[in-house]
Image (cartoon, rainbow, N blue to C red; front, side, top):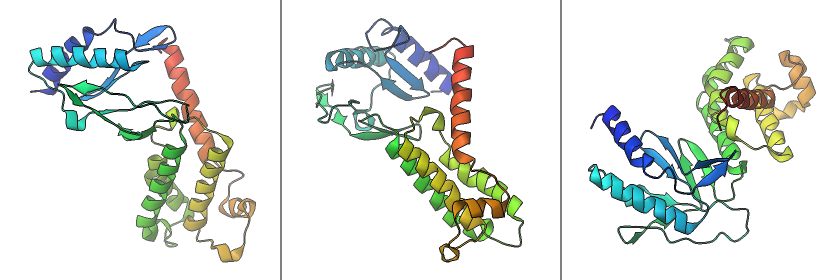
Length: 232
C-alpha cells in the first residue's frame, strides 16, 4: 500500500471517532494524534479509551487494516503516586501497560515530567561528543570551527523536541552544566586546572552560556507559531 492511500484510509477511519470524548484542550476535543502510521489515542478514562479502540479496530478491518497488538501499548499519565492499572483489550487480548514509551524519538513517562527525557538527551549528547572527540578536541582545528561542529552534531541531538519540555530549576542547572562540560572538553581544559566556569567562558570568548537560552528561544518560537495559526 502506498503512503498516500494509507493516509487516506486512516483519515477516513479516524473521522468516525471525531465525536468520541478524548482530552479537552482550549475547548477542543482531541482523541487522537497521528504521524504516518504512529497513532496515539487519547481519553480521560478507561471506558472512553476502550470505546475508541473498538471503533478504530472495527473501521480498520473494513479497510483491510489491523492493529498490531504486539506493537500497541497503553499508558496512564497521572500526577498520582500510585498509577492505576487499566485493562484495554484488542480482540479479547489485553494490551500491555507500560510506565514509559518512546514516541517519535521522545521519551514519555507516566508522571508526565520532562526530567527523564532531558537527562536522556544529555547522555546522548555526551556520548556523541565522546565518539567524535578526536575531531572536536583537535587543536589543529580552530576553536571557533570546533565549536560550530559541536553545535551542529552535539547540540542538535540534545535540542531535539526541546519545545515540549517543562523546565524546573534543577533541569536548567543540568543544561548549563552540559554546556560547560562540552566547552571544557572542546577547549581541552582539564579539571586539574581548577578553572571556574566564568574563567572558562572568558578564555573561549563568551560572556555567558547559550544552550539554555536556545531552548527557551525555541519554545517561544513554537508558541508564537501556534498562536499565529490560531490552533491548539
